[in-house]
Length: 262
Image (tube, rainbow, N blue to C red; front, side, top):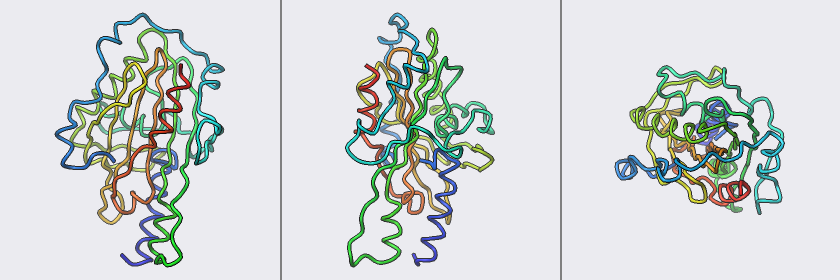
């Protein structure tokens, strides 16, 4: 791919990612989709537990990820307007898929009692001195951008929030179309994966998004419920938006945030 083509694709991907998630924000790949189908569902043994305390906005602020909780990257405690997407700015052609669009945009599911947002941007890969210009451009974009949403719920709202995303992933496996802040989101495939550890239940979903120049790029969603609180991680890698290459949601960021929920 020529330098001009890479730059055009990367810039277009960056703009799409801003609407997609927080700038932004693969998954297992095609050969893993069938193996992953059905994973990430809530554990029934935990759903029957007595409702936990519903955290206030102030308590969520204390539980939210801080810069001191991670070794690298940058944690933003105050999101710019382009990253702080409101629920009415997210639309889906198929209402059954709306929970996925909400999660990808960093919008809490249902009607939370309180919400708090953070974002994390990883450190980009540093290119070597002999790196070609087009490779250096992709290296500069080769970092994960993660929007983190903490939401607390009354009653069984937290469990229902996770269930809603898992159900949507099953119903919308063949893809869906949505708009985020007026920007089109064309998801051609939805696959579930292994939920992260450390919570009462959770889910992991990979959206395969139609990007520029025929690229099909991964965008990832991870949810973890701890008591009455659900934390959603919505991630993209801007280089992946240009190349379609897979990436992983930063496990240390997920673990650090989940640990702070107690």
